[in-house]
Amino acid sequence: MSTPPQSPYGQQPPQGYGAPGYGQQPGQQPPAYGAPAYGQQPAPYGAPPQQPGPYGAQPQPGFYPPPPPKKSNTGKILAIVGGALVLVIILAYAGISALTRGGVGTSTPDYEVTLPKTLEGGKLKLKQDLTQQMKDGLKAQGDSQPDELRSGLYTGGTDQLVYQGGVDSRSDSESAEEYLNGAEEADGTSPGTEHKKIQPAGSGETWLCAVMVKEQYGQKMSMPTCAWTEDGVLVAIVDGSPGTMTKSPADIDLDALAERASGVKDEVLVPAE
Image 1: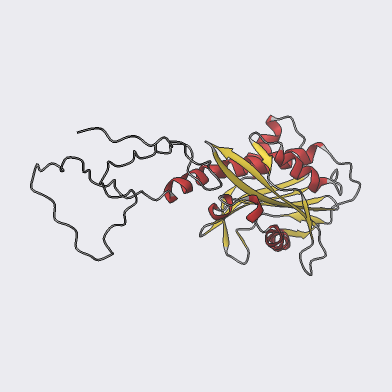
Image 2: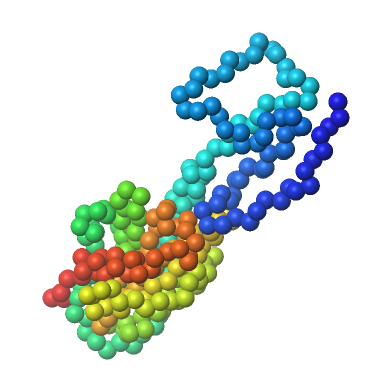
């Protein structure tokens, strides 16, 4: 029996946001002539399975059993995104690091930053206090410490959010821009969108938002970020939810993130004593 000819088309299409990268299985070889087409649908849900052939029976010449159904890539994607939360924290650290290097503000801050146990009316709960980790990172890099710093990872269902709040008398009106610029300078990070000024309805605030793109094992991940600063106070959030990180930057609603960030700001700031 002659060997069926191989397909000349072996190249895989380029991967996009959310496509499996590191550890991806090689493509299946095309079946022999007469074999069922790759991707053939299994029997309808609830239908009785086909009876196996006699023990030791071999397939007929020229015919091969269809390949098993392709496994879902969801688990692989979530594993990559889960590991990428470390990158979200690094991104936030890079932003606060840049903040402490610049600014010559003269205003006395009117607020203090806190680290609540919950955010968004209890929807998100504090999973990890990152404050000391951020302070240690600043010290190791030789960067100055802000007067106050609070940071935490909040989770709820599939939502994951990194919050940072800082108070520093050296901060000025450009601190939000410096924060985003610093985040974009983190290793392996590139701008996914331009910086966008957003004023959430009824807030009277101006937030600066953008999407950063990180790449890990060939997997691109979007990390939308919003920062606000006024009179020496900065509040910033990074959305690290799996459903967000696997989107293309153009598909992320920064206006909606700014609305969330404004609500977070109201929960974390208290009047200075």
